Length: 332
Image 1 (cartoon, rainbow, N blue to C red):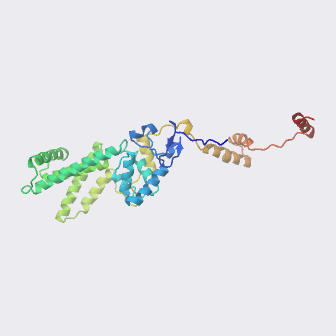
Image 2: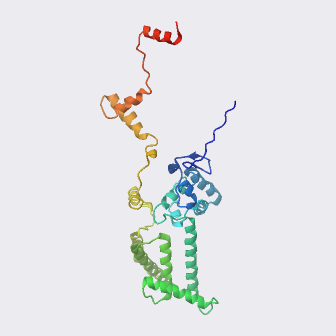
Image 3: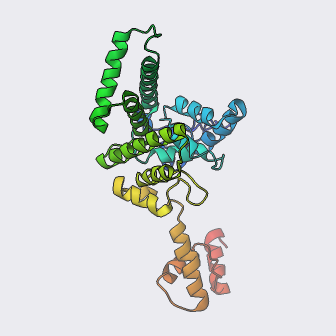
């Protein structure tokens, strides 16, 4: 009779990779975590394993030939938050691990809890602010020739000026006020700044940018302004990437961030030492070393108990006893 092939079924404790078909209950290690509610049934894990996700990046890179387009495409597919600054920070990383490294960075502030829906909203908001600002500047420069509805533009400009003066105080030059407001909105959007201290640093950066713009227009020296601007950027923790320091956190900084903002919970019993690595070291290294050298340690008893399972003990019984056993088994 032919054997029936056993098919492994998906349960509530298992996940299947939609690309390679692998089914496993060790999804915490093999599947990336996401913030999207679409995967609530998988406890927030993507239905594609890390290996396949990284391979998908290489496959798309052959098609699109652009790092940013590929990451955005993957984010669209799996409802992952896309941030161009974050994507830029991974341009020089190992191509085989870029998607999983990108997702791991999303689990740090200020991107926690965001999905691709937030990407759409933020980009629409930034585009609208940019359009209004450019339209306002054009209206100011070409007031006599413009055919735009001046009443609507004036209302928009006044709103922008009001918000700018609320942030930066009384500014007589309207173009300067609009420039500062646009820079402020752009910096807040790109950095995700929320605290009062970060907002104050961004205000200083905006002033520096305005001074730098005017200095370049007048042909003046910009060295001192650029140094001040860079110091303010560093003060906000947004230091540009260099060969010396890079833009990635050190291991110590990463651990501190996790412990302060998202402490790691105690590991469940079923996931403690799943590979029996501790037992292998205790028994087959420390226990065996103590047994071989004659130096007693606490691991030798467990080593001896374990080795009994793999030991063959010579039968020391006499011939008469062996004959008696054979007789009882097979008769005279």
